[in-house]
Length: 223
Figure 1 (spheres, rainbow, N blue to C red):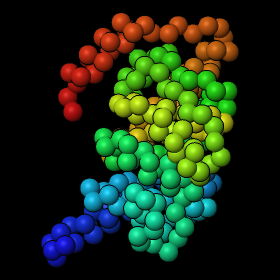
Figure 2 (figure 1 turned 90 degrees about the horizontal axis):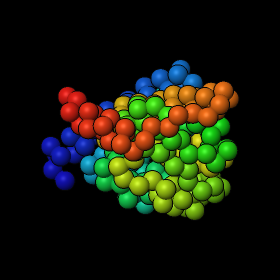
Figure 3 (figure 1 turned 135 degrees about the horizontal axis):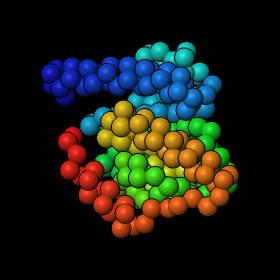
Figure 4 (figure 1 turned 120 degrees about the vertical axis):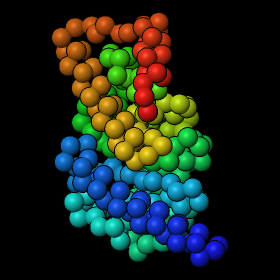
């Protein structure tokens, strides 16, 4: 590795650490993260994965607390223990080359539907931002296990940007951390709409034809 390449990598790493700390605090403020639940990560082009540490409150995490692991889950940098869901993050990155950031939360509405084993249908056209018409539910497995990672992988078909985990929570992804965080917020909004509508009656679900029109309009939106 040349000096220039090493410097560029270090700069990207410093930026990733800062993004994760700032994003974690914002998601905590928005109520998507709480205490030490959930985890977030960024994958760099060299396959270094920068991930939040295990068992630390998000308002206490500093840049130096972020852990760097390889796609094999082994620690490359950092003195903290990486998130227990490191296997999940690494396997999603391995199988989804379109993904460079992951936000995993236990946000209330999304997790309520996950507990019920209920996928989220197209109750609102904004589901198109998640590049799917249904947010699926991955099968339950004990947290932090390879089995759970595989279950999420199997339910997380590209180009979908979100999946629920039965009796657990939500995984949202993006090409950037902001995109992944926005996806997590969108899922929580959709889940809230779906739950509230179910308390009143039977929600109207948008048809495939209606959603196709929405996708077409989204494709024409400026970047």
